Length: 102
Image (cartoon, rainbow, N blue to C red; front, side):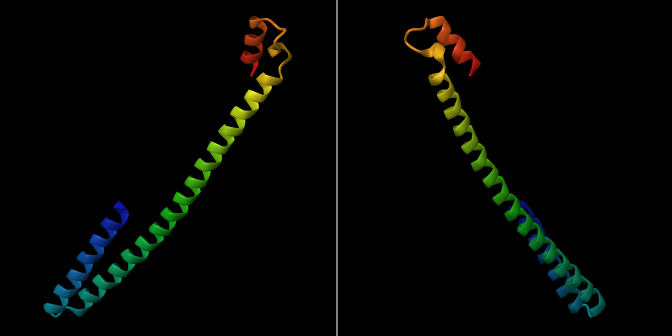
């Protein structure tokens, strides 16, 4: 999770800046650093939520795609087997034509 690592790293830097500002007696700078830290954390939470939603949607699409590919293959096989040219009485050439149409 690159986004989380980057944002969490920035969050830690902001916290450290707030600590340093307090050590130097600059409460306003410390407050600003903590406000930015909170903003980074909220952004990270939002991105992780979006990522989870997108991952779930992608997995569902992949599953549906596999299901459709299976159904398509079954339909093609059924079409070839139901083709009148594919009957044992027909020539091999007729069977090839039937398969080519599928």
